[in-house]
Image (cartoon, rainbow, N blue to C red; front, top):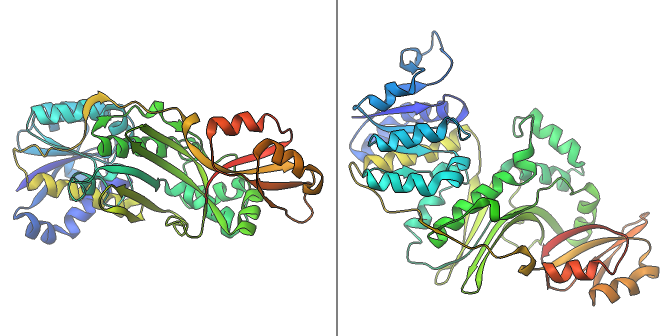
Length: 404
């Protein structure tokens, strides 16, 4: 029997405990062993519940108990998650976490400590919720040279953009509904400003490249400037707008960014709606594969944590080689990334098209009824070139990168 401790009995932590009980027979068949939750670390007491006697408030109880061979971190944030996880690994205990902030900030150090202590630091649930993506990158796709990873990695922002697209809601209306349903926090900044997606694409880029990635070096732009008017144009163009986390890896350099991107109906991620996530991975031999599913939620995310518990059960006393080294990957400047650009311009197309073409060259024009503006779609150019050209054209109201 494997004794584990769960740190944090919130949405994900309680989900882990629920799955370990509900699927205990399945887990036993897979591993030949059973999992017992010996401790649950939480500030609360939970009187009268089945977990009442498992609750502890002092981490040292878990750290010093030699019977606990694995710790599950579902507290979130960096403090006290980081010192508790570090101490657990140093004590020779496996760790599984759903905490993308922890992995993005301290993953390199924690992976090294795990290796030194012949245990594992596992984080399948940190990206994509219940979608298997971490493990496929270091197992199924281990023989591939990963050239690109592009994904819709945040269910909250995808829900908001879907409501704006399909229901014609404003950003504020869609955000309010997401908060009512519990998809968005009261302070939604981490989601809507792209910070959550940034950490996730940093983790995936590190796995794909084998080198450390500083998420702070990744260009990050959220969805707060996207409007319902943008989606009216998108509807006319047969397109949609999604928040992408993207990483493009080549011999010339690595480009990674988070930004809203306009895509057409032929794009594989076009139909990824609501709180679902979708991740495209392009390998030099396999080509493009797609991972799709529930990107958040209690049981989907907890399911990914339980998969890590099973991995540890199958590797007692053995460190599974995965992750990345401590050599920092250089992320190229956003200025060198190329897109087409959707640009909304004040005025009437008949009067200002010549100006737009003088600035951007050949463009495709779209107009909406009863609007004192028009929109153009440029040819492909670098970000730097776009900014230089845009300076020549006054009255630009919006700019969205496009892959169509």
